[in-house]
Length: 91
Length: 176
Image (cartoon, rainbow over all chains, first blue to last red):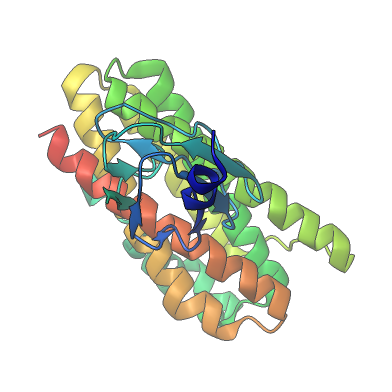
């Protein structure tokens, strides 16, 4: 592990609010992580459509983080509310 | 069958028949009456969901029903917490009573069905139910709520219930 490698890695935030992922499209790099923060009054998930990653249950007021150590499925949904869709784009 | 069991029609009947003597429309209900209606509507959808979980063998129906139980329970817990904070109690009213009476007929009808017939009827009813309740919330309830915290909770709930409406529409198409 080098300091250069560490400095290039980012933790991105996605807010879940109003039954939507904000931002709905996020550009990330391999090695980055994404934290989803649920600001709605009901639970949600962020789940890859191809099943390659999943935050699992995110209760109201809770957050979950996923590290993307390789390119994985980019389209994702909330499995509880499938009309909620978003995309991770790998740079 | 159940697609004809439109909540809007029930509300209209309640207003234009026996309940007319009370001289109230949904838009005239006060905050505590609206809280009772919302709580009742949540409980009704949870009952529909439990029926679906008991009868349906379709995994997509189960996923939807579990979401209804999860979300409407969460919303009701927050509503009760808010009422407790405000030191208030929800007030029963004509609309809560009409919704409950209507739901009992729907549950009786749905209970007679099995297999794909049940799945189609349950999905159709969920779509109609959410469309009707969401329309009431958006156009009759929220504009007339006085307490800002109650209004905020209704607004937050409406966003989620609109997602339910979209999910129900997807389910209706999936079980055709």
